[in-house]
Each structure stands twice: as structure tokens, then as C-alpha cells.
Length: 637
Ligand code: CP
Picture 1 (cartoon, rainbow, N blue to C red):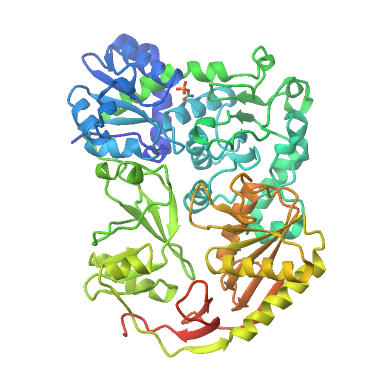
Picture 2: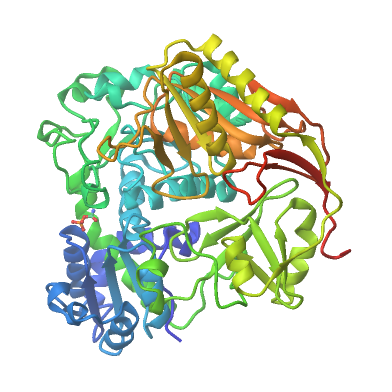
């Protein structure tokens, strides 16, 4: 039994974090007691580090323990192709604890599964860095007396900064307010926001906050709000408590801490690192309203935080780094004392899912260990039913990225069908019996010998000519509202929405003799959610959303959740001037307050019905059509 690991900040309860803080307060005693006498720590750093590695090593030595290490993992057997699984297995027989930093998301979780001793995540790709969060929280508590009710502004690269992801989850748990001030296109990833919302009831809403701009020199990069109020309504459901908290943050002007981060260039694709980035400089020191706002940074800094702040009492980042030693002494002592005890007893784990089939669903994160080194992992997920009317979501247990289940199958009868809310109970039954198969595509289901379930008879509700006229009419209306084609971006939700967006683009070209830019958006992917479709110029770089008029296109709108997710991605990726919504079919019924601006046809329909748009580009059918049919539950089929 390997004992307790620290892979995610979620592995510690709030109470345990407080216990670690108390231990850190007594670091001199831990030192004199030689709390780790006779124990060995192995540090395996596949990525560079100064603070985390040296403070862990210092902490272990101050506890009377000793340290073994590979000075450069490139000079270890990793260079000969050794897997992380084998490295973990072997090194854990030489040491009593492993401290690991790796460039792949989820790699430390994978190593913990093979190690026979506790494993500490010292940073895994762009995912988490929980021991840094312990330093951050401890520093904040020391400076501000507590964590509850603090307002912390996190600034910079929130997308790739692993310290940020662990930190915002922890701040939410300690009931602090979080203001995001991200560099353009580097906003918090969707999986971080979703956990904030699902697990901690936080809804990060855009707020007007011009008062922050004075302290950040690249004001252009500020992102807190789309200014148009209708977009706010579209964007998120903000309950009254959250809204009043946000309002008071804006008007009350009490910001307890600015947490600045470096642009994580090592996690960006070549050619995408050049955009502007916020910086904190001398202006911050002069602002009377920030007189008690401390400035934090996990370090290393590059040029986003001016050395002018170093001498100011509010610049506490070197103190924050220094706390690394007592906090890590405390953490080691805490984990050693846990011995063979199991992980958090009170921790509610969602349902685990592993496919009974040889082809399992694939994590959408290209940097996930499950894709980088499949032999060291098993594709396992948490299965999340998002409630009434909701989708079925898989969350990768290694890297937290998630995606929506489209196709489910029954492993015993070898039948598959598209997942629908009406199937929720049936699917739960299959899950209990370990008979639930989930597929990435129909092709995959068919390769495994699955055949489709039956459905009720189909009725055509729109034929080819009607679809053509609807696209023509919507295009005319869009052009009537948005004459500036330079500014216009037609953005379709993959797959059918993207095909319709391309048709609208072609129709615009026919009506105006000018081609608008067309792109597509992938809702449950991560990383490359946005892609230019036309003009298809590989040199053109990422799509720019700033100040654009976006026409978001989808085939069918029902609950509005897909559109909500698309809007979240859009506002995380830039600051458009406005977003309008065009859909071919509006089924009525909405869970999210979204109203399309352009509708091809209204087809009110119930939950037990499916409306499918068939487009000749995507289907074997030669003609376009929209069909409606009832779902016969697999249980009844
Ligand atoms: N804060 C932090 O993780 O620093 P290092 O990369 O130097 O370890």
C-alpha cells in the first residue's frame, strides 16, 4: 500500500490544508525533531525548475532525510525509451517518496499508479501544481489573516499556467472571490471553469472593471467583460448572489491580491507566442486604491512584473518562494504521518468509467499522458450526468479534460445509438452491469460489430429546396444587419453548424461578390477549439476574434447548452464586438437564455423526439433534408 499521494489540490481537504499550515508554522520544531530521519526522497524533474525542486530538496534535508535525484532526466534511461511506468516502479524501490515534474498532463497520476511510495506532483504539463498552491494559500493567509472572502485577481496566462488551475480551485474552496484578468486568448480553460462551477458552485461571469486597467500597462489585453449587456445575458446564468458579489468587487475596489503569471511559452505552439501580454509596473505602486493589495507571482518572472515592485512592501513574491521550504517540510511530514491510510474518506468520487471494449474513448487533450504514452495508462474517465436535460460527459482521470458523449452502445446486445437524455436511466443500468460502451464515432462502433438501435418512422420536415431558401434568407438578413464584411466572421459549430456556416459564406459571396472569413468551433475539444475554414491559408496564423462581428451558426438549437459552451470559448479566445446566432432549426424549449437572431424554421418538438439535419456533405443521402423521429428507448426496442 503506497500511502497518500498529492496529485491534485483536490486530494487534500480544507481541514488537511489547515493542518499542513500548522505544521509549516512549526517548521523549526520539525527540523529539530528530524521528522524524516532515515527517509529518502527521489526528485524526478523532466522539466526545468529552481524553486520547487530545491525547496523540496532543502525541506527533506532539513527534516533529517536525504535526497536522490537525476540531475537531468535526458541523461536518465528515459533517453533510451523507458516509460514513466517503469521509472516510477523502479525508483519507488529506492526511495520513500517521489517528487515528480513532467511535461505531459496526467503523467504524475500515471506514475503514482505504478509507484509503491507516495508521489507528489511538482507540476504536470499545463494541468496542476498543487504544492505551489499550498505556498500561495499559506502566503495569503500569513499576509491577510485568512482566505475566506478575499478577492484575488489572477492575471496573465491563465490557460497554460498550471499553478493557476490548482489555485483557483483552492481559492473557490476557501470561499475567496476570483477575478480573472487574462492575456488575450489565454483565459481559463473550459475544464477549469467547469470544475469551478460543478464542484464549487462558482460561475465566473464577465464584469466591467475598467478600474483595473490603470495598473496593467497592456490594457488592450484586459479581459473581464464583453461590454454589451445582451451578451452578458447570453453568456451565463449569473445568480443574484454571484452577481452581487461581482458588483461589489467592481464598485468596492477592495482587491486583496494580484497574482501575476508568466507567459508559458514552452506550452505554446511555435508562432503563437507573440501577442501582447499584461505587465505590472511602477503604476501599481502609485495607485492609492491598491495600497493594501499584495502582488504575488509563482516565479520565475520574465518581463511581466517589474523589479520596481521588489522593494515595495506589497511585492511579496520572494517571501512566497521562501515559504516553499516550511510548506514542503510540512507536506512531507503530513504524508509520512498518513502512512498507509487511504485517500480522503469523505471525498465524493463520481462514477468511474472504463470501456468494456478494446477501442475506448480518447481524451481530447493532445498533451494527455493517455495519448503520449498509452502503454503506461488505461483510458479511464469520470462519468458525469449533468442533470435533467443535460449531456453525458466523460472527464479524463489523468488530465481533467472532458468531452460530451455522442454515441453509446450496449456491449451484450452489440447495439449502439446516439446518446440522448431519454436514455439516461438505461445507460445507468448498462453502466452498473459494466455493459456500457462509448464510442468516438459510428465507424468505431461498427468496427466493433455494433449495429444501430431502432427508432420510430422518420418524417421529413424540411426538404432540399426549403433548406436552400432558408440559408438564402438568413444570409440576406445577416447582410442587412452587418454590412462590414471585413469585420464579419462566420463561425460554425462542428460538424453540421460548420457546414451551414460554409454555405452561408458561399451565399454571401454570391450575393455580394466578396468572401467573408469562415471558421469552425469544436465544443468538446481542448487546445484547438477554433479553426479557420476559409480562406484556407496555412500561413494566416490563429483567427483573430477581437472587435469582430461574429455570426455563430448551428444546425439545431434545443436546450441552448451547446451555444452557451460555444460562447464561452469565443469570449475566452478574444473580445469580439458582438456575437449573433443563426440556426437552421429552433426546437423551442430552452434551459439557457439564448435567443437566435436568425432562424431557418421553428419546429417545436419534445424530449422524446430527435430532429436531425442531414446535409449532403456529411451524409450518404444525396439530398439535404431535415427529419424528425421518435426515439425508441433501447429498453423498449
Ligand atoms: N514556481 C515554480 O514552480 O518555480 P520553478 O519552476 O522554479 O520550480
